[in-house]
Image (cartoon, rainbow, N blue to C red; front, side, top):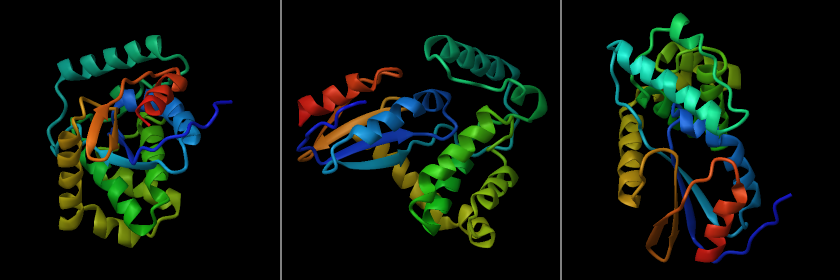
Length: 212
């Protein structure tokens, strides 16, 4: 069990994308880190927006590249699971903005739906070979979570939701995020990009403790 650290820090920003495979690999360690953080440290999730909207199919070369990344992750981060059937059963598109907006739309109903939607998207994509680039998939996930479907559909493509995502993307860049996931510790207006360890949560917690 990881001992909770003491910290005088103000905010820990987690910059991510629900369709980022490295974020999926980091999820178990991020959960352990979150549980061990001091209560006085504020945590803010920031959607990074890995790939903008498009209806164009993903080029075969890029599909092969991402498949290779999945295999690399499985070799480097034990117990990370991917369902490679996705590449045969779905029509891949390099488009993660819809999934990001789904997280915002879910959070608009109730804040506690934020992580539930992120996890639902990740499980659909990486375990169930379903495509979160498709709005139909996102609506199905919202219904499965018990969200108000009518409200979710309305907010998924609302101008305010589009603007909110662009605001979060800009914030991630302003904070100095370098890829996804990125963790930035902010205290008194000063930001520090933390070193990610995909396996050992203690390594990252020590960095927070050193800054605190």
